[in-house]
Length: 250
Picture 1 (tube, rainbow, N blue to C red):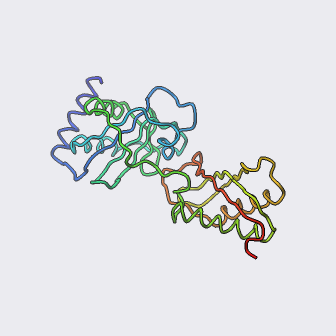
Picture 2 (picture 1 turned 45 degrees about the vertical axis):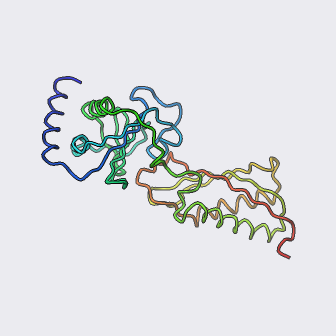
Picture 3 (picture 1 turned 90 degrees about the horizontal axis):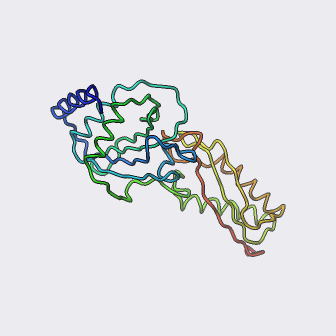
């Protein structure tokens, strides 16, 4: 940290000490500023796909408020993809108040993109040097269909009912496993769906018809939870297994 950065942070410490908020704590999940990930790493999938290397919890309100001051006057930039290398959670008790994702050059805050700077990078490095590493399972993103607005179980029940309807109409029996990958916008509207039949390997016409039906049903009828950090590079992925014995409704 150079002298200019050091003096600026001293001023921020003094200001935030006199204007401390009710912010409870800060969670830092950090990978590496300089090493590029080998795959797409976004704000929404950072923990799920990328895997952070280090984790810290900052309990000092002064430290958290200092960071908030640094983030208060950022220069907004165009909305574009960048590989996330660090994700921050600001808490009030156990309620997430803000999520911030960044790399050395960019920041996503409240769904908007901003230019990062050396002062913020230096301050986060400073915080990580002041607190021990920890390991917490709290506040991890949802998995495998939990993004559905009514919950994972409701999603699976709904899709199984729809599959059952078409299977009965076309007199299909057997075991069908499908991997489903969806894209959604920030408001939760499905904008794209890909359905791949995993089992059987050589799908019949009936099974392909079911997969096509489910794809169209998801696109037109499934609404996901809102996520202001969701980007076009984020996928909602899950698998569904269906088994039907011939003529079981008769």
